Every structure is written in structure tokens, then in C-alpha cells.
Image (cartoon, rainbow, N blue to C red; front, top):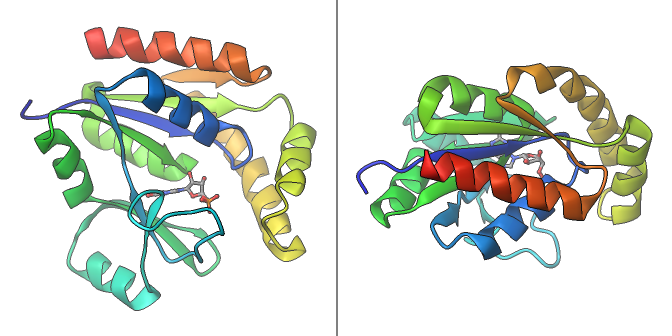
Length: 189
Ligand code: 5GP
């Protein structure tokens, strides 16, 4: 496969997109996860070069200067995340389609760039309140970081209309099934 397709999952953090993306990866052997580069600290259960390429801010900015990113974002104040061109190429070279778990602005940027080759899915949580509960319950962030995530989530919910599809995640099992159908149809198209 010279160029595969791109399946983009975006949502405010806590909406459940990571769980849905992980589910899809178990269902579709032709999909491969786009490992982003980030300057965020590695969390306990995360694996370098599997969940993210954890790199220093200096290394990240060096890559920015050398145009190594297809898109990148200062997702949170001082914390950068980005998709490397080499990552997409690595996956296409392996004959697979790329699946992304990225923030809303990054998702919109990728969709604009790849147009019909990309399916951009916005995962919508039941409400901002539920989102806040999920983020708080995760227990991985400090109160300041949580507040930053809430503020960003509120803004991101307004971007849903810019995506090809809005996938409601009110019930995870239903959302996973719907996601499977969307992906199967898009891959076959
Ligand atoms: P987390 O710190 O929870 O892993 O991720 C924070 C946010 O950054 C999430 O919304 C995640 O999807 C997003 N993100 C992860 N990788 C990328 C990327 O390569 N580009 C952009 N724009 N956002 C990303």
C-alpha cells in the first residue's frame, strides 16, 4: 500500500477516545496507532515508543524547526504534542492505515490536509459534568492540570461540527460498536 487511509479520533480529554481507539486496534489488524511525540512527563503505566515518543522540549522544538511534524500543538501550557511525518510514513510503509488519538485542533488540521483520505471522528461525552467526573476520577493530574483540562474541554466541545462524524459516547459498548462500523465502512470505501 503506497498510501493508506487516516482515521482520526478527537475529543476533549476524558471523552473516552483512547478507550475506543484501543478497542478498534484489537478489532482491525489493518490499523496501526500513530505514536505522537510529546514533552509531557511519562505516566506510570505508559511505555516509551508505544504510547508516545517522550522527548525533551529541546528535542521537540528542534524537530519543529526541521519541519518534521505534520501537525503539532501546545496542547497544554508548556506541553507539546505532535504527529511526526516519519510516523505516518512508517505505518503506510507497513501497509496499514493510521489511527490517531489527538486533540481537536490537531484533528481538524489533519482532516484539512488529507481530505477524503481521512475520516475525522469527534467523540462526544454526555455532558461537561460527566467529563469532569471522569477526569477527576482518573486521579492522574494535579488540581491545576485538571482545571486546565476542564477549560480546554469546554472550548473543544464547540468544534464538533467541523468533523465528518460525531460519535456519542454515552455508553462505551455502544460507542465501540458504532466506531467499528464507521471504520469498517471507511476502510472498504
Ligand atoms: P494526554 O496528556 O491525556 O495523553 O493527551 C492530552 C491531549 O493531547 C489528548 O487530547 C490527546 O489526544 C492529545 N494529543 C496526543 N497526541 C497528539 C498529537 O500528536 N497532536 C495533537 N495535536 N494532540 C495530541
